[in-house]
Length: 290
View 1: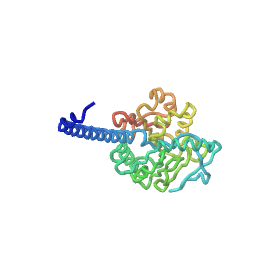
View 2 (view 1 turned 90 degrees about the horizontal axis):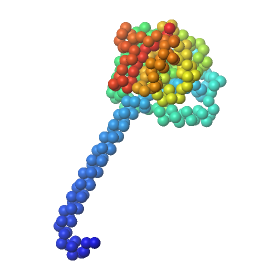
View 3 (view 1 turned 60 degrees about the vertical axis):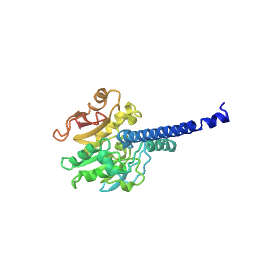
View 4 (view 1 turned 45 degrees about the horizontal axis):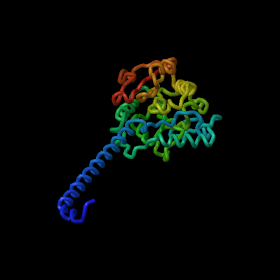
């Protein structure tokens, strides 16, 4: 215990010591703040480049849908009906899970210019209006996909989307028609749409690990069969996969996809199958219906 006399005797030293402690504490807090800020920026960057940019909702069977029409017209919203609808509790459970997965960027222009594989996608969509794709189906539709039709930039290309869980503001979407259903139920709900597409674009849905975690062999087979059914002869399924989406990609392709498709390059060798982005984090494969 320090006496009052000792405190007075050492007041100058104590004052200096307190100043040093205050300065050191301030520097430590500043350093921690900078580290925290850096960590937050790093996490935001990783999330944007990986799973939370995925428009994953057009996958599992059993959507809550209404029935209006099975005929597709320009700018029509297409909805379907089916006997395999989920219960109200199941639908709410899936909605909560999907809401947690969906990412909607605040700065859409920056998102398309810089984030993840978007610069490649911008280049890819821009090629489609110059190719031989008269009818295109894009699986998954969020508000940031509204640029896709403009990137295609062709009045001769019919661009449709598939999405059972629409964005909060559906007017954000820009397409020539919308399939409001899951891939696994499209054949039942739209029986007149078989063999009607030249190209099915599947970015961040079937090739996303969180989707595959929910799929068993039956759902995988149903999904692949639905894509096959939608495509015309020699039609192309463009599949984006994320690193680690399945334990063994080669075995998965051999078992589930290659019996029905041939893997080739895209658009006169513009891209090879397995085209890799961001050091292998994203890969693009081009499957042609046998």
